Image 1 (cartoon, rainbow over the protein chains, first blue to last red):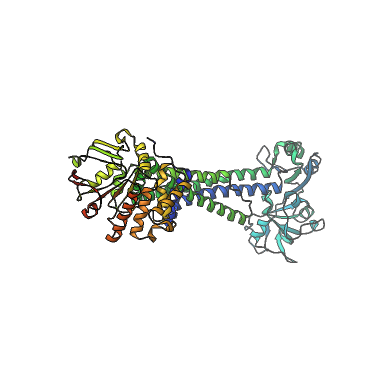
Image 2: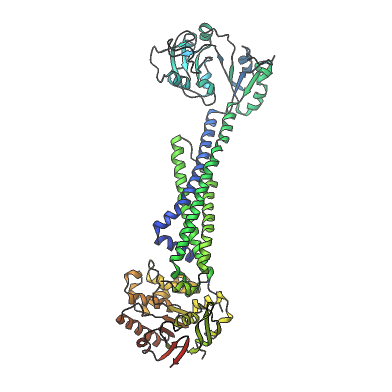
Length: 396
Length: 223
């Protein structure tokens, strides 16, 4: 005697979708939990990847070939001094393309002489060489930069954070600030310098002006070095000895882009929390799907009985309800993936990041939905299959 | 000729202490017969239908369908037997309300291993046999009760089963519509179908040439 036939996949898909097509509101509500969970997971992973991509793109734009040389500490814990000749000597290293320097002065900057001298706003006043802006990859947001003439005069430009702290958002002719006990005219305000954040909170003046008006001793404190990109490591290894041949251990050399790259990698610390929330939502969604499928089995007893009388085996009934649960969860998962991607696209394009939704995020979201559907549908499907056909037919 | 259906000393008991729904029922149905089983409620008619339809196995005795002893078949083989050799018609019709009647009838072959295109073609033919050839894409809620029962009959017959079992097929219909359904069964019988109708109404049973009367799980008359 021939057994009952296997169902074709198309027939199974059609049967699985009947319950969803005929009870759309119920189906969409019960899939909502899974949709939210998957959306949360996809959005978290997508936003994290996009922000990382944004940061890395920014780093690429700024260049990874910038090295900084700063004065470190002496053996006795005092601040060391870089030799005045350090920039010149560094410039003679073969692969070095640009050398610019800043030097810290002891002066403070205020909006006016009326500001109490304690309110320094943590703004430092630095002497800057003329090519500094180009070397660190920042530009003038307003006004103009220093030039060979203004570098000799009491003229200053403001880093982005310094301008904000002083309450200055535009440049007009004759605008002055109080630096080191005298008026300095403002030439311009800078854009943020991602690779050299110390410049953001600085008031920059020319080297000659610093020596003339602020009692600056002429020793550089930071030397910014651009090299041929392929030679960064080689240059880095000889920088300290070149900057201060007598005391290379008193020189700190660093690569600012390396710190940014590390930050990009570390940014996913909070992701765990949001992924956890997504997982909880998935769990709640799974319970919702299981619940709705159990109710569906009770409501559709006569359908189960009819199908058994038409020749369905217990296996046929089981696979039908299991497929329905999986389809429900998959639809929720697909909606969640779509919502997660939309969230990522909207947020990332607002921030100007390139959109990057990792394949693992959406594939994982759909996979999780599939597994959840199967797990949530198993118990209801087994119940439906266990129902004896005569019992199922007796109801009505 | 092998009987389509043969019962030999079939008993069925439920529960503990046992309730006897069938107490030694024996009869046979030959091909192309039209038989009525009649009896009051509680006489064991429904249990008999379930045993005949292989939805339940007897506690004792033998059931053979198209010469095959049901006791020798696995559950999966029994399902296959239902899919290919038995057609059911129920008092409540049991139609899928959101599907067209052609899909409803085609589902009668879903578990028989017939391809979708062939199922729909056979469903069209079966609906033509019950007089609904022009309503293929209608849905059950658009149909009258009599038309719905015609759809259910078409679904039972779509695979040309060895026997059609009809459980109170007119129970949910007014008497005029019920007469039309019975007339349809007569026609189908005349065309060669083997039909067994279960009813509690003697008036309906009296239309049939052979009537098996039941009471308290036993056959009290057959002829």
